[in-house]
Amino acid sequence: MLWTILVILLILWLLGFIGHIGGNLIHILLIIAVIVLIYNLVAGRRSV
Image (cartoon, rainbow, N blue to C red):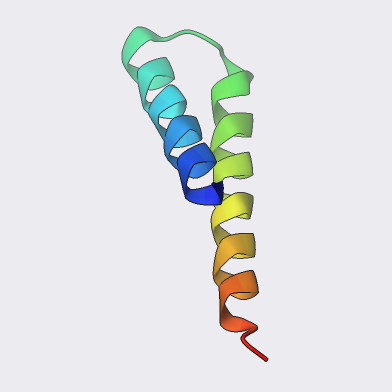
């Protein structure tokens, strides 16, 4: 599910660059996508 959210956020970010819409919101979406990616990688390695 986190990968789906990550992909959606990245697509919205790319669409914002192409359409020049959203302003700073686009960069906030990118930061959220990166945080979700990092969280997913860290949580996936905790196989105790």
